[in-house]
Image (cartoon, rainbow, N blue to C red; front, top):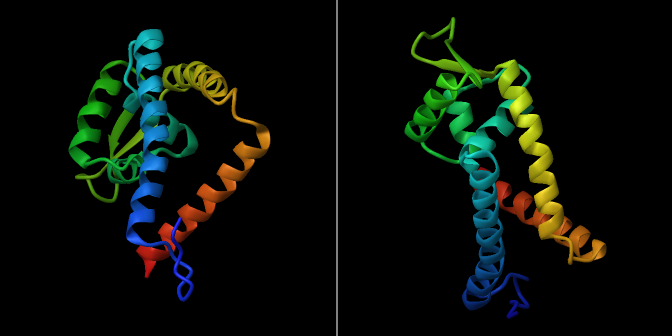
Amino acid sequence: MAVSAQTGSIDGRAAVKLWLRLYRPTALIERELRTRFQREFGVSLSRFDALAALDRAETGLLMGELSERLLVTNGNVTGLISRMVADGLVTRTASEQDRRRFRVELTEAGRATFTIMAKAHAGWLADIFADLPGEAAASLTDQTEHLLHSLRTEQDG
C-alpha cells in the first residue's frame, strides 16, 4: 500500500483498494445474514437491527435517535416501526415535551423475540467467522476500532 512519507497517509489508489477490502466482506456477511433472518424468522435484517438498538436503550429511543443509530432516514424507520407496533413488538408513544416526537420501546414480546433472534445471530456470525484465526479476529477488531475513532474525529473536526 502506498503511504506518504510526509503525512503517513495512504494515496488515493490505496484508499480505494482498502475501501473495497472493507466493503466486500461486509456486504457478503450482510447478504448472508439477510438470507438467514428471512429464512429462519421471516423478518428483515432491518427489523433485527431496530430490535437490537431498542434492546440497548433502557428507556427506549425517540424515532430520530433510532434513525441515527440505524443510519437510515426517518421515513424508513416510520414504516418499520409501524409494522413492529402492529406485530406487538414495540410501543410508540408521543413525547410529553413535544407531541410531534415519538418514543419507541420494546414490549415484553419484542424483548423475547429479540433474545431468540440475537442468539441465532451470534451463532451465525460464529459460523461465518469460524475459519478466521483468533489472533486475526482480534487484530481486525482493533484495526476497525481505530478506523472508527479516526472517522469520528474527522466528522467532529
